[in-house]
Length: 259
View 1 (cartoon, helix red, strand yellow):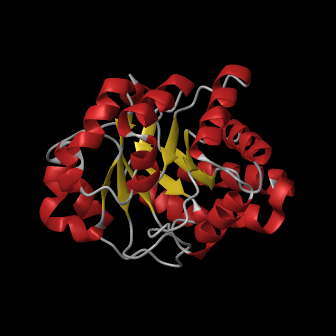
View 2: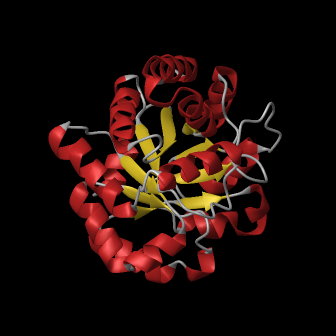
């Protein structure tokens, strides 16, 4: 099952990298995903560009705009994942991060069936309310694709409830607000992880705001992994199709710090 594949990615402290699919092109995204895996990423999240990415900061908003301008669609990203699996032989887990609207528009059952067919292991849907997740989870379970639970600092009263339904891994949001590089992370991550551990042994990865090796190492010491998105997306925004060396160096540096 995908959940088992994802769990194996957490055999050590897991580095999870994010990039926006189709920015600056599908060919670049395919190359960058392979490059990140070769540099030590244990799981890669591919963002589905959306016109109203409410959870994202400026870097990922701008990346979504560029990808949409390049006519990137969910179907094209499914094709990208298919190429990564069948042509490139990529074996690390892949997650797609998308908002509920594109999934609903595509059709829940059809979306998850297509995701499973091409080799997507999990979906992350930031605007999926926990109270309304049952229909989505049923479609995902039929296709054997994990739906990743997100726990934010504001989820305090519901941490155990959300965690008890988690599969694959738990995405622990480090800070209030949108994605983006932060100089400091002040949330009491250790306490939240302890509360999660009371009800599940599903791995916990911390994301939102992590950009430096020191931050990644600190989060990995408290949880099972770290998620980095905006810093990678920003490199791609600055360098476009020429970001290979910068991404390779950055991912290797972050992985080294965590282990």
